[in-house]
Structures are given as C-alpha cells and as structure tokens.
Image (cartoon, rainbow, N blue to C red; front, side, top):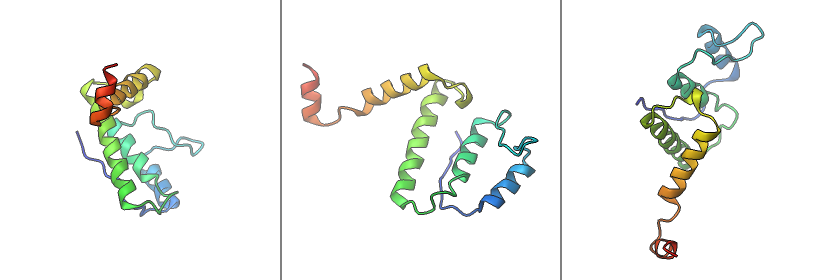
Length: 114
C-alpha cells in the first residue's frame, strides 16, 4: 500500500485547478470528475484539497494520517475499493473499530463481561 501524507498546504486553489486540468480531472463544466481515478489518486486529491484549513497543528496532521492509514488498511485487506464503499461497508468498519478500540482500559474490559 502506498504511503499518503497530509502536509501543510502549499498550493493555491488556482494551482490545484491547473493541476486538475492537466490531469484531465475537470469535466466540460469545470467540475471535478473522479470517475476514472484510482483509490490512490483519490486520496492524493483529498489531501491536496486541504487548502481551506492551513492552520492545522502537527498533531492533527499526524492523527489524520494515522486515521487514513487505518481506513485504507481495513478496506484493502478486505479487497474493497474506496469507490465501492457503501452503507454496509461503513457499518462493518465502524463495528470493527468499536470492537477493537472501545474497551482498552483494564476496568472497562472487566465490566464488559457483564
């Protein structure tokens, strides 16, 4: 799996639009069209659009990167593409995360038995 890292915004909206035009990601109405984009390209586009919030802390950026790695790993291990994710896949992901992370304290684990 390819690594994706969110970094501080470096591009203006105009620069992003030019990149999208060069990559033929804009339709005839200048709307972003991701129909033929791979999962990896979709993630890169998602991170490149972070021009709106330039003031995220390094901790927040690190957390976003970790969350994205968790999400990608979960779906890639199950051979589910990002474009095919629907309600049931999100429900499966949420349940897995709840089971894996919800009860990590010793006291919580003890009370979970009841």
